[in-house]
Amino acid sequence: MIDYREAGAADWPALDAMARASWTETFAHSCSAEDLALYLATAFGPDGQLRRDLADPTVRFRLALDGEAVAGYAKLTPATLDEVPTAPSDRQLAQLYVLRAWQGAGVAATLMDWAIATARGHGAEALLLTVWEENARALRFYTRYGFSHVGDHAFPVGNQIDRDLIMRLPL
Image (cartoon, rainbow, N blue to C red):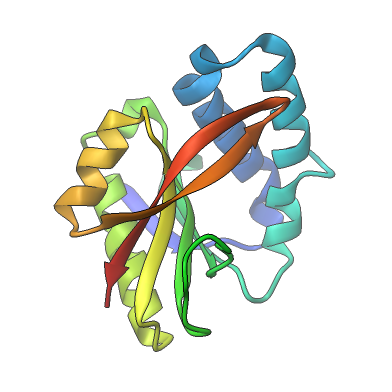
């Protein structure tokens, strides 16, 4: 059974390990080993963005736990996309990661429902996200929720620049 709760600073080691594993299993095939190492070093680890975000009071995390194992999580931030217009109250689903072992079990849907409800509760006019243009599974999932493509975002993976689609859900 999956339990859901907010994440705190004490969750960082398990969350960081899970996020690193999820990113690697989903995207490592799309970049060189060097670019993968560069990306992982900036996104995760003791000096990574994930740890800084856990300490940021404007960022909210929701964990999906199977016992002590982190099966997935969602990270909700203020909207930070310069490529599209946003309202000050808009929120961005900065990450929605679910390890393969729990994909298809409703974890992503529960985390998405939390993100939408939390953004609405904040008074957001829209929920935005970015998704790699070649992540077909995620694109289908977001489209089912009513997100639509509104712009493009350059996403650096080490020295490689990927095209992410900016998607928006009016709230």
